[in-house]
Amino acid sequence: MMSLEHDILLESGTNEVEIVEFSVAQNHYGINVIKVKEIIMPAAVTTIPHAHPNIEGIIQLRGEILPVVNLRKVLGHPPETGEDDKFIVTEFNQQKIVFHVDNVSKIHRFSWDQIEKPSGMYAGTDTQVIGVVKKEDTMILLLDFEKMIAEINPEATIRVEEVKKLGKRERNNKRIVIAEDSGLLRELLRDTLLEAGYEQIAFFEDGKDAYEYLSGIAESGKEIKDEVQLVITDIEMPQMDGHHLTKKIKEDPALKVLPVIIFSSLITDALRHKGEMVGADAQISKPEINQLILAMDEKVL
Image 1: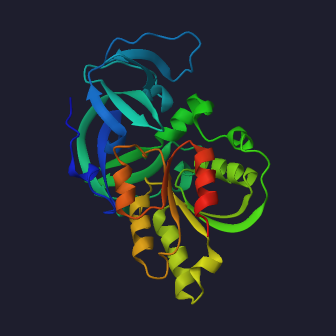
Image 2 (image 1 turned 45 degrees about the horizontal axis):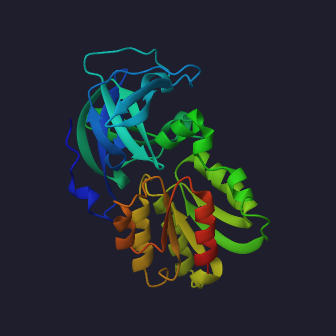
Image 3 (image 1 turned 60 degrees about the horizontal axis):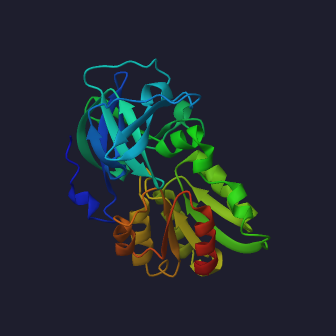
């Protein structure tokens, strides 16, 4: 099993990420090490009748029953089994999921500003790619694991139906800035927050774009709190991650008045200290949209 004990789990606001590199059908991909619990040899899989086509089945691991997602099928390749196959055991969005890959090679540390946003033919809401990093002669594609799971199990993602449980809500004129790199999540957030009464939302694909927008307001001489009343940020984003964005806002004399809520699949008890270190006003785990809305109601200026 690959060791995943790294200092980056203790650090925050450095704009760095550690990526577990793995391969599927001779292409190179990556997953944030914070999502990875362990990497194991393939175990016996029990198939489930009428399961989603990308679900290979289930395994038992230390008394837990975990679903196995076949990444070959997710990425459009015929399923094959090789002698180097590995199971990547992950935890995010408050659930544990196993991903079956062809091989796991190594762990890399990158700065988020080395990771390019998808563009051209592999951009948009249909792509499985959220970032690209060049490593010598290899390109490592960072995959949108939240989107994969949302497609397999729509009940496990943000849903307007959940917001309706809060009851009738009034429209308001609060202006919200949201940094979220996933096109799918931006659409879901727009729909759910509109249902919750928040109509004036400016979306940005990464923390860098969001920070440049906010600092531009401050540089224009306007009072930031008159133009923006709340910031919501994901953590994993190309160019600038959410922890670094939060840190920069809270260290900026003109911007530090802004409340910042981190809304991410990586919010766990073990990692909550990272958001606290950079001054986040609240941290909510995806897909808990109702908790996010209640936190917005409380923190918005």
